[in-house]
Length: 58
Image 1 (cartoon, one colour):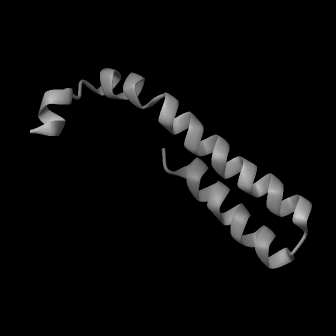
Image 2 (cartoon, rainbow, N blue to C red):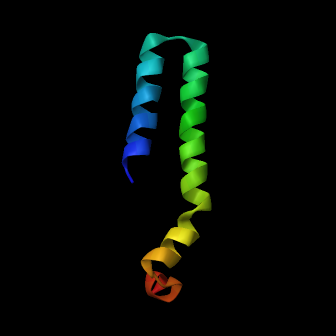
Image 3 (spheres, rainbow, N blue to C red):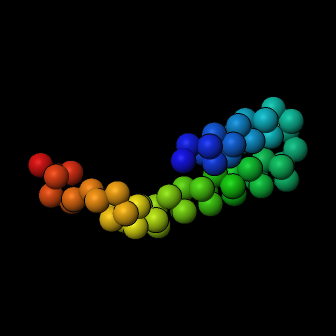
């Protein structure tokens, strides 16, 4: 869903405002992890939802 991304981006914004480099690094790491998970599981989710590659391209 949308909630993990919202949480990760909100944490990045709050950490930048706080100015602590360790917290900023952890927050950016969280965003990268959320992006990697969505990238690696996209085909599995497409298959689960029944989305065809041909329909997507056409």
